[in-house]
Image (cartoon, rainbow, N blue to C red; front, top):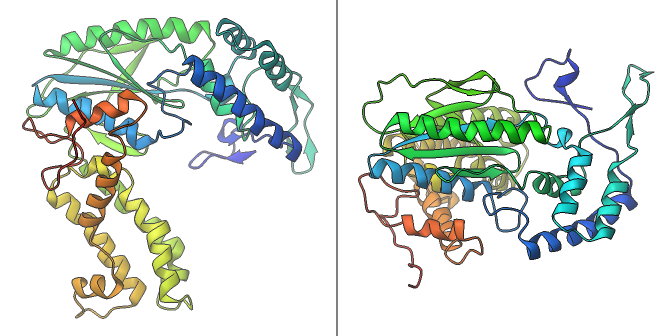
Amino acid sequence: MLSKPGKDPKFPQSYRPISLLSSLGKIFEKVFQKRINSYCDSSNIIPKEQFGFRAQHSTIHQLLRATNSITEGMNNKFYTGGIFLDIQKAFDRVWHDGLIYKLIQLNFPKYLINILKSFLENRTFKVVIHGETSNTGVIKAGTPQGSVLSPILYSIFTSDFPSHPRTITCHFADDSAVLAQGTTIKYILRTLQSFLVSLEEWLTKWRIAVNTDKTKAIIFRKGCTNFNPANLELFDETIEWVTEVKYLGLIIDNKLTFRQHISYLKEKFWAKIYLCLPLIGRNSSLSLENKLILFKQVLRPILTYAAPIWGLAAPSNRKKVQILQNKLLRIIVNAPWFIRNSVIHSDLQIESIEDHIQKLSRKFFSGIIDHPNNLIADQTDFTEFTGRYRYPYTTTKWSLPLKPP
């Protein structure tokens, strides 16, 4: 059992069970995973909207798709409403009989179904605390935490996630978002509530739980937003309206300023620096070369995660990220106050955050032009500046090759 960060250790739900798997079993699971993935790819079982645990798919791709849709709505003077769902204990709630039923319905080969059935059934568990062992319990639901098969089995189990003709669904494993656009808030509310009704039926049928306390709703729109939208309900519980949500590690506010995300980056960055201070501080015996490796491989990626998306933030906000890098480099080289930041960057051959983000963005956007998933490849249609609000990343400073007609 591993404790969940930020949870009260007194309660059982604050721990995550991890299965202890044999080395031989792990090798077999790797081989078996390739068979399942091969069948899923050939039969198009996993929906295109599901980006989790798939080759050539990342959280940045899904964030790009979501933020492009929001920006497109702003440029067309539309409201964009979003529901960000919190699936409760996703892998632990996969219903075994329901999964086998879906495998049969999807025409999986019989030998794969039989092996998976044997893999899931007759699993037991015990809990040992301070030398005391609990009674043996039988696992009737869930896929083993730590198994390479669990992600693909969860994706298959949720492959029939309900869709709505007037909504956009974004999935990355169990992190799901649903977006709807319209000229009026009433239209968005009707659309989202209609989707929630179908979602209730699907969740009930397949025994999947949603944490309504952590599920949030938000309205994206530039300009004046002094409105009080009516409540959305899921299982007779009201979904809270918020002005910002955290989705796939990126804090998205209702005006796409990313100001709150950069503030979050600052706190996370300094927390990591304090942990690494014995290695990068002035009293560290580590060589400058190794300190720079830590900076490039561990610390700077914290600042630049999802940078192709939040790179459209105002220059004043991006400057805050550069200041964080300046302070860290001064700590690494123990520079006195009179040494200019530009000199430190030049001597260490470290590029500015602005230049580094542009390089990351150029590489990222060039890689999606011929992407096999058309939902990702189509995002290049948004790289041209055709409206008042910019699409990620601001492409006015450099151009991308356009897709052939």
